[in-house]
Amino acid sequence: MSAEPDVHEEFDARLKAYEGRPAAVTGVGKDPVNAPMIRHWCEAMGDTHPAYTGPDAVAPPTMLQVWTMGGLSGHPGRAAAYDELLGLLDEAGCTAVVATDCEQEYLRPLRPGDEITFDSVIESVSDRKTTKLGTGYFVTTRTDVRAGGELAGTHRFRILKYAPARRPEKPRERRPRPVVNRDNAGFWEGVARHELLIQRCTACRALRFPWLPGCNGCGSPDWDTVEASGEGTVYSYVVMHHPPFPAFEPPYAVGLIELAEGVRIVSNVVGVPYDKVRIGMPVRLEFRRYDEELVLPVFQGVAP
Amino acid sequence: MNAGDRLPPLEIPITRTLIVTGAIASRDYQDVHHDPELARQKGSPDIFMNILTTNGLVGRYVTGHFGPRAELRRVAIRLGAPNHPGDTMVLTGTVEEVDGDTATVRIVGVNGIGRHVTGTVTVRVPA
Image (cartoon, each protein chain N blue to C red):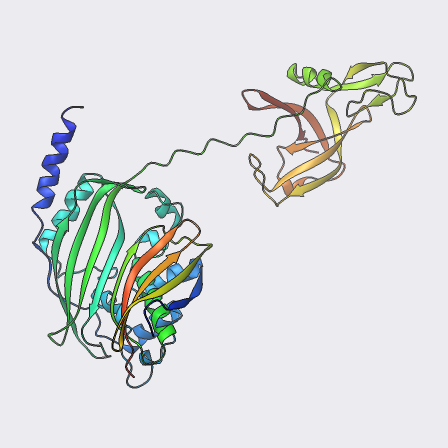
């Protein structure tokens, strides 16, 4: 651990040695200043300034850097020092780049037909900085842009070359917890034992689901339970596309399952593509564990 | 124009299209300006606007206000909070100084996460 600051100091010193060295020597613009690129720029920016169109058009001054861009094929004119510096930073893990500052002075307008050349120098390399994006170094270059050999503008540009900060993985969203109360606790205790319990009125023998404190038919508060056989059919269903809820990945089928015993329960239909679920489809009970504390009864589609 | 004048704000919806067309119009093919997956690998939640587009938008804002004769002389900007798709940036400006036909305008562009851009624009408006 104690060696680390020295390592950084030594590395920082190596980087500092690049200050004042050329970043580009007589770079040549890939395209002369031209009307199509001006038009595309104005279209993208939504810029309708009249000076940028028509027979006497000038290029938007803020395009200064555009004429020096290497595009996909890069710059043969870029001096070795700049590439070396960026290479050193890459090796140090600073593989990402973001521009932070741009200062441009416009000395004369650029017009279609102007041939662009430019020279660029590494003005400064910062100490190691920690930013929200990650830790890295600010590299500042200064470029003189010429048109037909005449100085047309200057461009100071600062980038941050950085090692991307690791984003903590988002904890996986968990399914909502069931609300367990004294009226339904017996049901969830059954689920924990992988039993799907149906309430039965001990007075009139009617089965009921979901669990309730009394019988809908005769009003008796007395009950016992019957364990469902696990056989059932899809009585009805919906397919959820939208909105997405945490822990659920749409589209998925939610079934109203009629159990062999005659009561109905809402749950997921699994093991069948969501668009293959049909009314009347036979299903079989299954207990699925969703996380360390949640087990739910779901229904597996049974191939006919 | 007088020192202290405020430019009316300009609201710019930051669409994915604006970010990508701006990057292409500026010949900037860095993946972070068009590829969300690679942008994420580099620590960003999504693609973000490149500095050249911000520069262009700041220039447009100032010349748009000062009219057809306005000429940009200098634009100096610093970026802060990135412009991601779905956000809106509101540009505001204040004239800081007037010297003959030339004005210096202080610019701020704020988005949903903070200050995207702060800067100074020098613009000449010949009579």
